[in-house]
Amino acid sequence: MALLELDNLTKRYGGLVAVNRVTMRVDVGEVRAVIGPNGAGKTSLFHLITGVVRATEGDVRFNGRSLNGLSPYRICQAGLSRTFQLTALFPEMTARENTRLSAQARLARRWQPYGGGSVFAEAARRGDEALERLGLTDVARRPAGLLSHGDQRLLEVAMALAQRPRILLLDEPTQGLSVEETLSAVETLSGLLADGQLTVLLVEHDMEVVFRLARKITVLHRGSVIADDVPEVVKADANVQAAYLGGYT
Amino acid sequence: MGNWRLFFLAAIVLAAAPLGLPLFAMTLLTEALILGLLAMSLDLMVGYTRMISFGHAAAYGLGAYTCGFLALHTAMPLPFSLLAAALLAGVVAIGVGWVCTMATGISFSMLTLAFAQLLYALAFKWTSVTGASDGLAGIPRRAGPFGMTVLETRNGYYYLVLASMLGGFALCRSLVNSPFGAVLRGIRENEAKTLSLGYNTRLYKISVVTISFALGGLAGALYAPFAGFANTDLLFWLFSGQVLIMVIVGGQGTLVGPILGAAFFMLVEHVLSAYTDAWALFFGLIFIGFVMFALEGIWRILTSRLPARSRA
Figure (cartoon, one colour):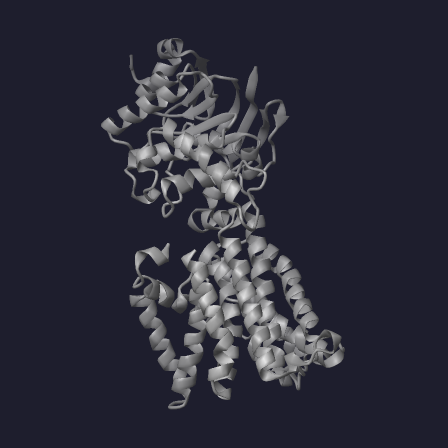
């Protein structure tokens, strides 16, 4: 069953076509990666899905409902939680407060202007659960701004997870990490995805990461889809090799 | 818990003040509490949400003129005039907040300044209501409802001011510690992220402006019958700047700090102006000193010297 569908999605900035008639779908329980060289339109695609920028043409449907024209907070409330390519956290709050505030956004009484003990308790419970799944329990009480870069990347995933999203959108989860940090982050993430409960769309340019995590791959090149298949087929695709992989096998 | 004990202690000390202080000191203290309420209301925007308003005089002036007008032209009892003034400031703030939050950062600050100056110009021109450059003079302290006359006395009025300030503090404190307050801290640290987490940040910001203006309006409304007048100085940008200085010197994001900042400002003005007309120059130097060496403000300096237990 399709959870997220992009239909002829196009974004033009003047003469530049950042995203060109992209049509793709993500099914429930699927882990799909969007790959492509720098400037292929991967992050633009994320911004279109999450409402940060508006599409020039085309449509994004989530669970059969169009997300066109909705503001980012409404799209998030519909069940799409994202991380950012450049780590976006609340640096002066502890890791635990970060996930708590994230989980709070999903509770009916999130705006209650007084008291709030029970709201905080439920949000903290969901947040702590997410921290544990990403192995961050030990650093939960440290200010987020003081965590290692690797832990900060994982904390952002934990924040998205704490919202119990229907689809998790990860924008280059290993961006800026050292080789060792990347290995350990990928280890943690593949453990998280192993049970097949989560639906994930991730953007990534590190091939190792993509082939470890994703079951389906969409290849973007200059804003257009040039391949869409399982990793083995994509790897062998001549177009993809020419455009991007540079003989990677 | 320690915090609430401190709160009750401060309330008791302030409530006992008329027993021990001479008249002129009571007048100063009353004004300091009124300004403290104003500075605290601005702290909700500046300290908790990182919305730097250069136009908080607008709330104060609006409250003062509304209360003054009602006292001069109607027989409305004082407490109702106060509420009406706070309500009007709050309602106006919905519009102000809606317009000003179209921008962020320095543009937001400039829009708040522009709006306050607009009210300033209006107060100058709308002679029939505001008395133009003369302002409203001879504003009486109308007897309370049911023939209550206690608010007309100096001490009675002091207790009204004290109750308003403590009530305002309890309200603000509950607000910043609530789920709503947690979202404000999110906006302060990373607004784009807060929005992407599914919070309608603009609505939260407009709400903060509204609450802040309503409390600031209440402070202005308390000032008019206290001083007996309301004039355009209360709406001037210079005054907006002074309130911002009170917040920063006292300690932004602490609620108590800005109240102390207001008292400190009044004290310094009172002491220095006895010696020199250029007291503002020296206060400027003190302010620069705070910004360079003690940006955390008076309240955090005081509390960092207390044992850790009572700080929690």
